[in-house]
Each structure stands twice: as C-alpha cells, then as structure tokens.
Length: 69
Image 1 (cartoon, helix red, strand yellow):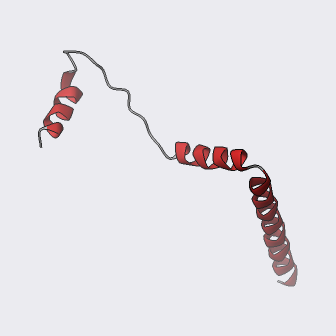
Image 2: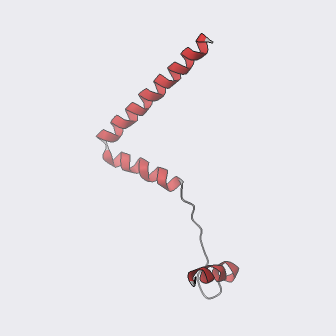
Image 3: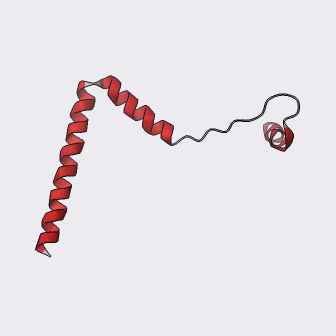
C-alpha cells in the first residue's frame, strides 16, 4: 500500500514538472503557445464537405430547408 502511494506521488510530481516546463516554454515562445492552442481547437472541429451546384441531392435539399426556417 505504501509503495503504491509513493508511486502515485512520483507520477503526480513528474506530471507537475512537465506542466511547469510547458508553461515556461509557452511563456518564452508565445508563437508556439498560439500554435498549441490552435492545434487543440482544430482537433475538436469536424468538417463536412458538401457538394456545390444545382444538383446537390438530398443533403442539399435538407440544408436549403434549414436555411428557410
């Protein structure tokens, strides 16, 4: 039991040190910090490619119907 607690404390300490190092890196390099934020935001976005033109099919009809609401 004591060994497990010590291991968890060590893992938490290492994680804290890694987060602190990342914070220092972002402070010294604001461009890199911006890149990290943008990368994280982009990972949350899903993009759908829709057909263009007159014959847009069922999905296009659905979207046109939604625009009229």
